[in-house]
Length: 320
Length: 256
Image 1 (cartoon, rainbow over the protein chains, first blue to last red):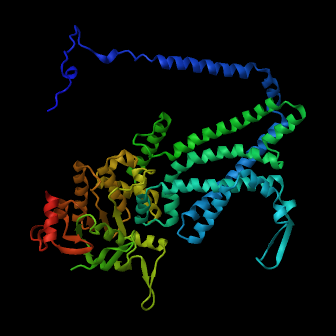
Image 2: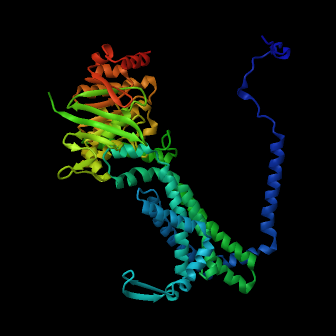
């Protein structure tokens, strides 16, 4: 039998006058934390000081253009592009995800190919491509495939920078959104689907009432990631002459040469839009978080509403 | 003797070439409770899942009442597989309780139970709530109607799952190891509810490891091994006078 080192077995209990109570123990000393904190605060203060005092920021110019008509028109166009492209992305992405998870081989191959193509090429290339679609297909027609045509239009007339932007951003976004949906859908436990099937629910109902609501918890955060990326991605449209936010400020600073303050104007608006989106995300996440936690609803307001709902259903149960 | 509600004939099932069910013949009469015992891998869960088409059988047939589960007989010899939607309609007559409860976590207890009566039986909201509250009272959980499943213990969740299955008033109830995921002290609250159901005349097919429940509540015990039914009979016949060495070995190991 090995003997323990003597310094571990051979000790005496410290004799103290008073019994020890750790209730009022002091916090441990952390000198490194203090030093790092002071450095961080100094650096942060320097950065803020730079922003406020460096004359090159020209804050008066920023204030002057922040609400100017050209800039506001750019903001409206950026919002319009975001909403339309997002709508295309959310709807088409959903269709693609369902196709990719389908039992039908043709649908699976089509969806996979779409995602492969639109996710695998740069968004900017796609935008320029759509803008120049007339070079590839000079005339667009409606008619019977390989048969007579009923109506036709020249591509260059139809495809304005705006349409090219909506199509380009939307189709690209759909490819990413499809994968976000798919990740969420396959994260739902198979037992959930089996239970729904065993209760006699038809496939469409299983999807919309059981699978999708549970998948939403995993779909919402990356979706907002991609919506925020889309807000900023609309700035690429300036390349094909779409009059969105970046294009608008460029138009101004190309004449006034106040490049820095106008880029700050654009940044402030982008930050404003993404901040609003962060707030929306918070509420949507809370909605789909129902039942996810073992604890009751966390906030006081939510608890109040939950109790009201509980009382209502109970009363109804008692009356009938 | 009452008519068989469930008739399984020559049922076969393969998983990628491996035969897990090798020609099962089993009948369950109306009001009868049949317990299926067997070691893991004996095919008992697969058998149960074939009954409501969660698994597609490789051969043989399953009748619940006058419905050929998963298929429709055409003219002459032809048999055509049903679509998922058509199978969904057949499943409404067969309730199932799972090992892992599988309550819908985004719905309250009450929503879990009322959804079927509301959407499938087209009951009014008030009627669906009344039926659900009656069922919840029957499983002793009327006070938890507005809780979410994750706020309940395993035993409570499983009792809600039983109430959910009963809400559609199915002719046949399937139980797939309903107590295997529970802490030992929660097992009896579930088996008590099941025993009461069996006594009230429900038709039940129960895959279980709870030998006590099988002995006390089952009308018939089936012992499965290697994809076949090795032996079946009354609880006394199987537990006390088994004819098969394999059954006796299983019982000895399980009872220890």
